[in-house]
Image (cartoon, rainbow, N blue to C red; front, side, top):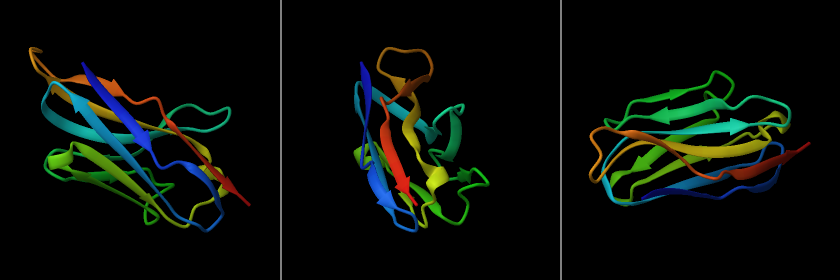
Length: 121
């Protein structure tokens, strides 16, 4: 089994910062890409930022210059540093990863349960 557990969400005022963390655990052979998605009230889930095993990153246009994704391979973890937060960043943030687990022929998608970020105006 593989699990992703997020932490770091909470309530913050507009203009503030938060750091989200996601740790993967279980019978992991290799973690390929890791990503952060979010789903705001009444909205579809959207990709916020992603990072490959090699360290290449990509960001949604709405967060470029404000959010930074990073990962710690030794800890099987991914982080999302969020700055200059806006009320429209309010959402449940989900960690996603493409993971090859022990005994599997190829990588599979795994999701965390999400952590709520609320930005007040």
